[in-house]
Image (cartoon, rainbow, N blue to C red; front, side, top):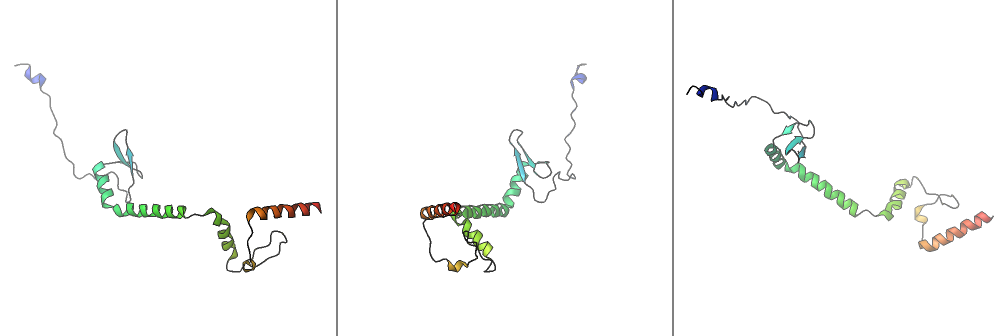
Amino acid sequence: MDDLPDKIIELDQIRINRGIEKICKCEKRRFVIDTRNRRVNCSSCGSVVDPYEAMYELATNGQELQRQVENLLEQRKQIASYKPWLVVIKRLEKDYRGRKMLPNCPRCHEPFYLEELTSWTGRAYADARISKWKEDNDNQ
């Protein structure tokens, strides 16, 4: 029995300190999930956040996530309705500025009102006609 005191291991009790403040005090937290170390960090300050706390905050602040989803859906609609062939028309409309600016004819360089446009021509025919006009002007 003399050996008994040598084999006793002292254990400290676990202490709870409830007065310590949270490490992360960011107002609008965004989380980064570290899958290798199985941790959740705050993307602003980098401190470790309790996973339960992060999930609870995301669940209670669902309106922000919903707003972001709605913004993404709106952007998707804009991209889906994007018509690249209207880019030139939109630029003309912007430059027109309510009849304060007028376009110039690319051939004679005289200004004209957009209301003067009376007809349209197929692109293949117009390209052939423009190339013939350029050849005629280069020969002169």
